[in-house]
Image 1 (cartoon, rainbow, N blue to C red):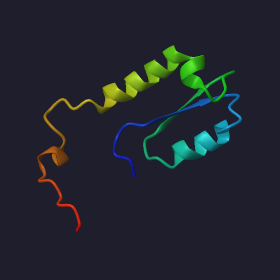
Image 2: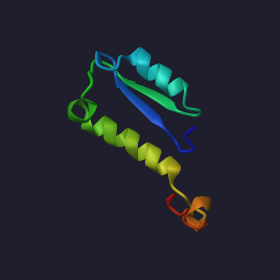
Image 3: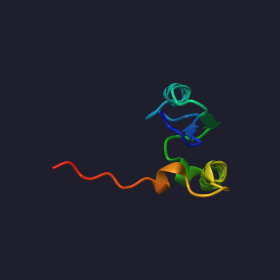
Image 4: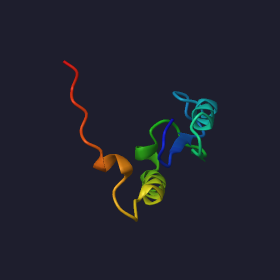
Length: 82
Protein backbone atom coordinates (compact mmCIF):
# COMPACT_ATOMS: atom_id res chain seq x y z
CA UNK A 1 0.00 0.00 0.00
CA UNK A 2 1.29 3.42 -0.92
CA UNK A 3 1.07 5.99 1.85
CA UNK A 4 1.61 9.07 -0.29
CA UNK A 5 -0.60 11.06 -2.63
CA UNK A 6 -0.65 9.34 -6.01
CA UNK A 7 -1.82 10.30 -9.48
CA UNK A 8 -1.92 7.87 -12.39
CA UNK A 9 -1.62 9.73 -15.68
CA UNK A 10 -2.76 8.17 -18.92
CA UNK A 11 -3.27 9.27 -22.48
CA UNK A 12 -6.69 8.63 -23.93
CA UNK A 13 -5.05 7.02 -26.97
CA UNK A 14 -2.30 5.13 -25.12
CA UNK A 15 -1.97 1.70 -26.74
CA UNK A 16 1.02 0.64 -24.61
CA UNK A 17 -0.79 0.98 -21.27
CA UNK A 18 -4.45 1.48 -22.24
CA UNK A 19 -6.60 3.79 -20.11
CA UNK A 20 -8.47 0.76 -18.78
CA UNK A 21 -5.20 -0.63 -17.39
CA UNK A 22 -4.33 2.77 -15.89
CA UNK A 23 -7.78 2.90 -14.28
CA UNK A 24 -7.26 -0.57 -12.81
CA UNK A 25 -3.89 0.53 -11.43
CA UNK A 26 -5.38 3.66 -9.87
CA UNK A 27 -8.28 1.72 -8.35
CA UNK A 28 -5.77 -0.56 -6.62
CA UNK A 29 -4.04 2.35 -4.85
CA UNK A 30 -6.10 3.77 -1.99
CA UNK A 31 -6.73 7.46 -2.53
CA UNK A 32 -5.10 7.54 -5.97
CA UNK A 33 -6.41 9.91 -8.59
CA UNK A 34 -6.67 8.93 -12.25
CA UNK A 35 -6.09 11.68 -14.78
CA UNK A 36 -6.72 10.87 -18.42
CA UNK A 37 -5.42 13.29 -21.04
CA UNK A 38 -7.70 12.98 -24.09
CA UNK A 39 -6.16 12.53 -27.52
CA UNK A 40 -2.68 11.70 -26.21
CA UNK A 41 -0.67 8.49 -26.31
CA UNK A 42 2.00 6.92 -24.12
CA UNK A 43 4.63 9.68 -24.21
CA UNK A 44 2.85 12.20 -21.99
CA UNK A 45 5.96 14.12 -20.85
CA UNK A 46 6.78 14.83 -24.50
CA UNK A 47 3.22 15.33 -25.69
CA UNK A 48 1.91 17.46 -22.82
CA UNK A 49 4.78 18.57 -20.57
CA UNK A 50 2.72 21.31 -18.92
CA UNK A 51 -0.08 18.92 -17.94
CA UNK A 52 2.41 16.38 -16.56
CA UNK A 53 4.27 19.09 -14.62
CA UNK A 54 0.99 20.37 -13.16
CA UNK A 55 -0.09 16.88 -12.05
CA UNK A 56 3.32 16.17 -10.50
CA UNK A 57 3.30 19.55 -8.73
CA UNK A 58 -0.18 18.85 -7.32
CA UNK A 59 1.03 15.51 -5.93
CA UNK A 60 4.17 17.12 -4.49
CA UNK A 61 2.10 19.87 -2.87
CA UNK A 62 -0.25 17.29 -1.35
CA UNK A 63 2.70 15.30 0.03
CA UNK A 64 4.47 18.31 1.53
CA UNK A 65 5.17 17.88 5.24
CA UNK A 66 4.28 21.02 7.16
CA UNK A 67 4.73 19.99 10.78
CA UNK A 68 8.15 18.33 10.91
CA UNK A 69 9.86 15.29 9.47
CA UNK A 70 7.92 12.11 8.75
CA UNK A 71 7.93 9.53 11.54
CA UNK A 72 10.39 7.26 9.74
CA UNK A 73 12.98 10.07 9.58
CA UNK A 74 13.67 9.71 13.30
CA UNK A 75 13.89 5.91 13.35
CA UNK A 76 17.37 4.40 13.68
CA UNK A 77 18.78 2.86 10.50
CA UNK A 78 18.22 -0.84 9.98
CA UNK A 79 21.39 -2.93 9.96
CA UNK A 80 22.10 -4.80 6.76
CA UNK A 81 21.60 -8.57 6.90
CA UNK A 82 24.85 -10.52 6.76
